[in-house]
Length: 195
Image 1 (cartoon, rainbow, N blue to C red):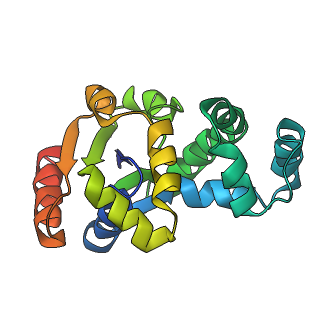
Image 2: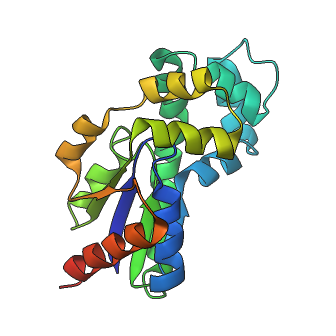
């Protein structure tokens, strides 16, 4: 089973790429964002969050997001709680799915920052970085999440810049045009990975 990490900034299109890999290549998708949200149902995790963020109004994703995206210090606090658990979950899922899928995809915005990808790179994992023009990302995020442009820009400013992420990536996937063009690029990358 090949392990592929897919990362990119907010609304770059990484989830679109993951869905395509799931549909066409029958990949198993580990959606780190979805898994992190599921962890918020665990009292073990919520207790840690409440201790780290005593000003939280409640444990809704909106309240947590408002607190977490305030600054990089808040992000580090939440990431120190969530990332080790996500790392363990990924290892569990890889062991569980290794005989069922040829491709295991880790879809994670913070795969580099968390150090999660580094541990898989040692065993030959590939990292694909999805990049897109800022204006397009703003429009997609606004349409998808109904957030204000200020909120989106604040979140972008807290993320590692693409030119920094490029240093870690095995493949760069530019997503500025149509889905069909994007999927054609994905197919070419998969051909290279499977050579």
